[in-house]
Length: 357
Image 1 (cartoon, one colour):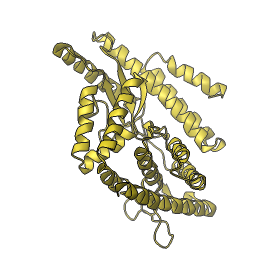
Image 2 (cartoon, helix red, strand yellow):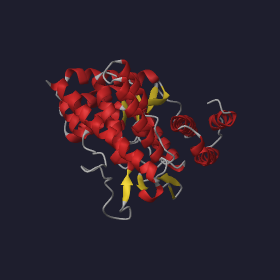
Image 3 (cartoon, helix red, strand yellow):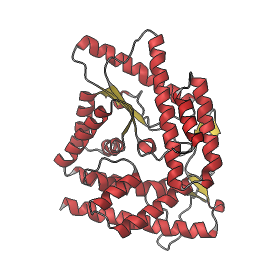
Image 4 (cartoon, helix red, strand yellow):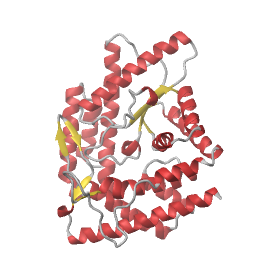
């Protein structure tokens, strides 16, 4: 960040003395970013917001470590990495994204020390999730959280779990693998997260049939554009008549680009970064990259127009956008972007099917 106010804000986050000070800073970040939303290019907005959120999460983890020390549990017994998945892993969080997290720590040889380590990291993960919830980040509805034993464990257990998901690729197992593909270390020992990526990409190479399962999962969410070029609106409930921007525009494009990146062994997690890497490897042409990038930027911009809620101290959002918020020009832009999304889904289906032959 070059903006002096933003730089000072990051320093204030790094020096927050307690959870209350950090909560005030999180609220300030949201208020500030909302105020300047229309002034910044969309990618710059997301970069600044996610840089601030990374700083908040890191400080929350430091405060959680200090809390355990005051409880008499000492310091982390071995190196560990705190991971973000979902939009956090992709550095695409909005003003109301929830928590998607995991934790991996180095193996401990002694059984007694291993149990002590398990207890420490179980409590640390619990405290981190509690603190982030208190800071306004809702828990993941799917329970992809570091305090879930399936998402917080030593490296050897992580390795066995990932290998198991590849060996028995049921629908949920494949969904978890795609979540892991978006994983990014936000705090701690970066090398541990890279070792997880080593396991993942080695297994991708050694289990070619997983591609079929990943393709099925990737194509699950369809673009919200009908066969006659009409926008497909929500039919029922309080959001009837609105557009599901998250699952009908943003997620289909994220999923398609992610699968193409996985098949190329690309470790980048940011969607725009993946597109650049796919262009560099010749998987997509410069013309395709430009049209996809422009459509994706539009979807990122429209996601910021969805209704934000503030419930019980939590920043929430269901990803739905009322059509009335869109001008005729934006509606036409959206339709054009969705056509690009549909074309991309056909492209990834053809590309992936070709890999299976």
